Length: 116
Image 1 (cartoon, rainbow, N blue to C red):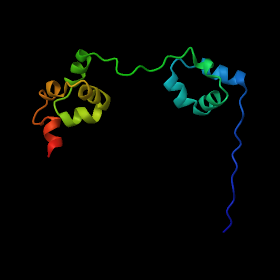
Image 2 (tube, one colour):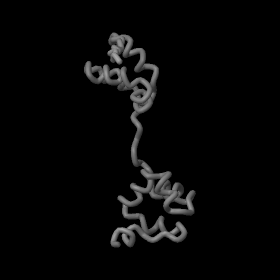
Image 3 (cartoon, helix red, strand yellow):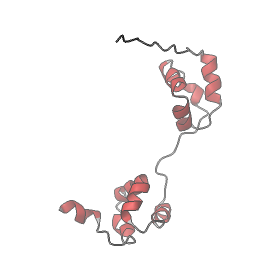
């Protein structure tokens, strides 16, 4: 059996083409995900100014009230942790675990689980 090496030809895009692609996106995470090759080319060529118009996704700008609203959707703590990992992490880092875990049925606080 002979092995055949397959070579993929990748089209090198011009700076103008990269600028056109970047203009069509409003959010940086979406651009990085859908046009990964273009994003890498922009980074390697030092053309990140082409992405200045894009909004970056903000992290953790949730108030305690926002977290309470998210947590109130769940009756089971394990389901909340599985589906809302970032909110759970934020609750723990702010020291609000006891307050929010009290609403979940039959679950012991995190401190009790980790001591065993």
